[in-house]
Image 1 (cartoon, rainbow, N blue to C red):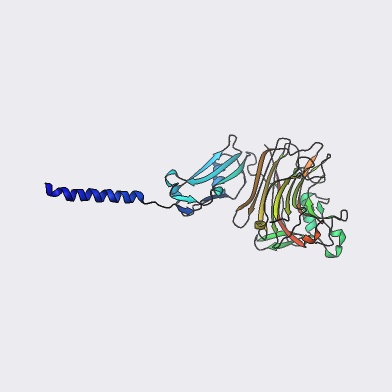
Image 2 (cartoon, helix red, strand yellow; image 1 turned 90 degrees about the vertical axis):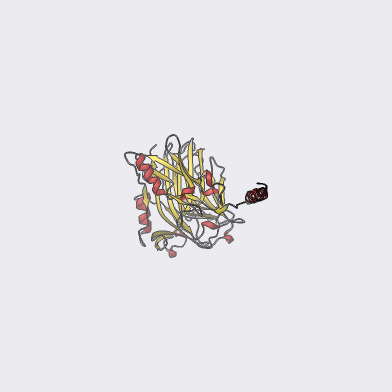
Amino acid sequence: MKKCVFPILMVVLLFALNSCNKNDETTEPILTDISITSSESLIAWADNDDLMQKLDNALYYNYGNALESETEKQQIFNADTTQVIATIDFKIGFQNTYNDLNPNNNLVTIQLIKNVENPSPQGVELKADGPGNTYDLITSILAPGYNPIEVPDCNHPEFGDHIDELFDSELNTNVFRFYIHASPDNDRCINFDRQRNEIKTYDQSPDNLLGVDNEKVVYKWKFKLKSGFQTSPNFTHLHQLKSVGGSLASMPMYTLTARKGNPDKLELRYAETDDQNTLTETDLAPFVDTWLEVTEIIKYGTSGTYEIEIKKVSDNTTLFAYSNFSIINWRAGATFVRPKWGIYRSLLNAQDLRDEEVLFADFSITEIDE
């Protein structure tokens, strides 16, 4: 029996050493990027089955180097089912296996509208239909029989219309082209320190194109800034929401503004009264030379809400987003709020500007009953 002691001790010792070596081994987590995106920022739904089907169609998941079975997806609805937050994360058992390179893209928020009588509310749409009669087309939608177009044609009529239409191969549809010239364009031969080429709704437009107190409206459109797009340290507005009536009518309530800087910026500007401030900003470069889709949702009123999201059309990537669910969106004496789109820019630093062409497409305005 004594002859067996040494071999047994050796086996125990080897086992202990192997155990120690295994415990000393460390496994580096696998680098990857899981994400969730949505093709919709607003979904109208009639019943639970309709809602879940539309969410399923809208949501896209990327699992990176992981397996779908190693991830967990959730949808968190608020109390009145007017918003859902959809998320993706690793299951608990795999959270040490992977290192997510960008957890910021693991969540999307979608606004929800329950409308049984009209589950898919259709807004008023303005779509390019091909070259020719562009002004007539815009007028027929935004203010039939009147003039919702503010262009610098008066200053050099030999150029022709400053808004026309062309076919865009990337979108595979016709789009609007807005021209602005560094010289001699001005603001309708009225103001000469600025230039304006915009379309709008106004007091001659149909009521369903005007935002009023306690009403919720969704504005959507696409736009593209050409390669080399230039702006100045002063304003270059691409979109405005302006109140009409009252002492504050001259100051836009919201603007999307491009501004020269180091680097150039895209700003979301807001004015509760006559003092406009930047709510948020981001580098302008990713917005240039690519088609973008904008969804802007606003509830007008002194207890208002505001949301905006800008996505790349090519891959549905969100480049810009802001929301505020407690903001003043109505001014004393106002009668309505109107949207404007185009190019409206200062000439105070004209040396920074060039002739520009900004493309727009697929405008829509949808009023929502709450």
